[in-house]
Length: 132
Image 1 (tube, rainbow, N blue to C red):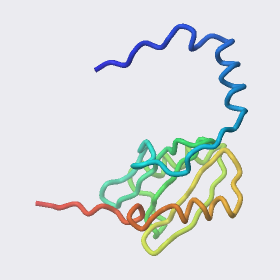
Image 2: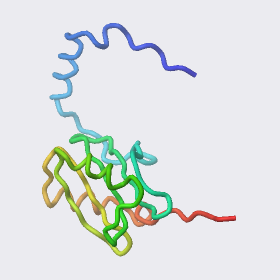
Image 3: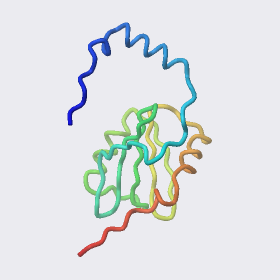
């Protein structure tokens, strides 16, 4: 199934200016949505469980789940080096993982705390894979 074509007026400068003006109205947005956020996996390592995802939020943030021992397996080191350029880095660890949040937008301690609290135990625990 293909997507419908983008209307020709969609990329019109007047339309873009109108969209910008509408976005400045700052309507209330839901803080919860059924299902998971549409995070795009950009790198990682299946063997260790390291994963780097792009988050669909303002500030173009990325979240990395890395081994707590500080290792950067596979292509993770290269990806992290690229993502850290031009972004602020916020790190914490739990009993199993080292977490790195990278954002172009500065975040307060309260905002980082909110991000950490919103990450449920189910999201923190890696899925177990059955091996034949």
